[in-house]
Length: 259
Image 1 (cartoon, one colour):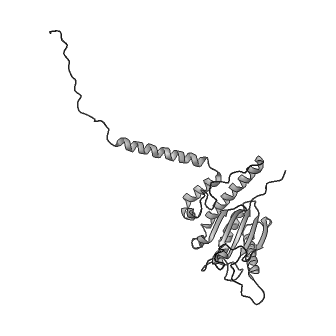
Image 2 (cartoon, helix red, strand yellow):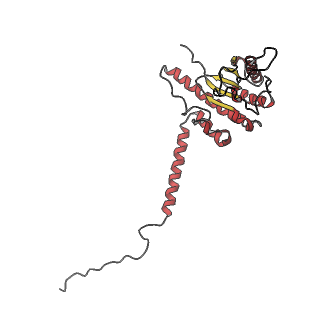
Image 3 (cartoon, helix red, strand yellow):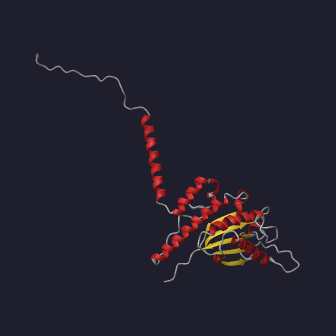
């Protein structure tokens, strides 16, 4: 038929195939990285001052933080970021939470200050800082080779002085009360004048108190000095373990005001 339409098939010219190469993958990876960084920043902005201080301290000196010994985001703290507020009057719960946060901040500052003490690098495994139900607990542990006092004596050695001075300067900035405890192992103290582990533990706690009072800790913040001898062994399975010989500094929680 003469009027039959003519159908022309239009061919596409060669060009891009079914994909555009791998450039989109690079762009997508950059986008995901940017979003991850954004959400990380937003998470940090929403955290407490204690967590912010801990994160900042880590990036200033990562060597001071040993996360293998703690499950907390705040080094030396308990598992979790901050203790959950207990049920009860709103003001009391809020005061307790604020006090805990301040003690966590003090712990972060103490770690940072200790990082500037020359002897800290060799003694860091013998200094333990953690939160407990009593408050912030700082323990100075003896070892078989090194310690903070002269052997068998209540005299603070040079390393112990530098450590106690650094701690005292930071604890002078908080209003909390402080208790000092001295502990020994179960090895009897050899003395012909009746001097025992009771006297040694009490004298070491008192020596630590005097040193810290001379270095920035106000005397009116001291709430007690205890000599415990070997009645509270840290390593109960081995009563003669050197780590049982220690001085403990307890920064107590503030008591909420009674109505």
